[in-house]
Length: 344
Image 1: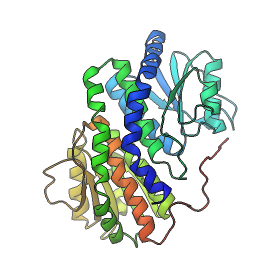
Image 2: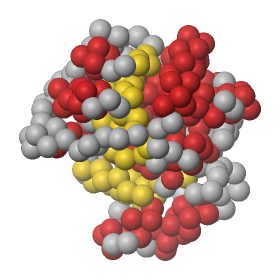
Image 3: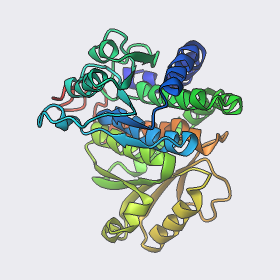
Image 4: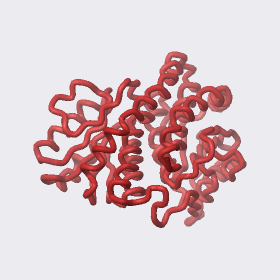
């Protein structure tokens, strides 16, 4: 078994370890945030970690009523004109913690007196050193270029922070169901492998979801691009309907991630529209009663919608991996990429 597939399969254990070993620290971070009475959060991240930040935007907004903005690191590095930070929480999310532009955002915020938090898998990184508070992903070394287990660990860290801020024991209990749900999602691998064979000639696709799982659409699209070199473009379903749907014609590949919950009706309405256009539709869902389902990867057991990004991304990771194999590519060594990318 190659490293990437092994790391995909490690995710239930990684998430369980994070739950058991990091929550008490996260509670202390949450207490510091409550004491400072922050009014908003600014998050700096790149690549896969930026998708975890997108999840945080929805989660902290919906469940903690905390407005979240995503930072523009170029303001700190290229333009040397960082915004003034007053009354804010500034978080840096980075699996390696080594990207200079992300570190610059957090360093400047701390110099301005803002509360700063780093979420990283590397306790000795620049980001870990510069932030006032540190949340560790505890994913173990991730050797593959494509991030998988560190991504779901970042999602879990964000979810634990949300729960700790709200002091919500019921939500914490719900979080403890996630590792088992991820393990169940991994049982779809043989089915995913067969589906990937059907798409091996694919050269482009759209990846669509909404709400919490907009982050999943972004991350699955990135994995497809990184591992298979397919031109995958990710959308919120609402944005997709505002123009890009015009590109869909008969046979157009569309990956639709449709969790049960508040976004489901909108996504199933889009699925009907795509079927009417005779798109080549692949549906990833944990919902039931989907009607006339297209090619379907159905996850069971189900978790609450706010937790589903940690589960529904797994079939997407497996799909990207097996699509690369079906195309005769080596997902271990995607061309032109390195494990640590240091942007400035």
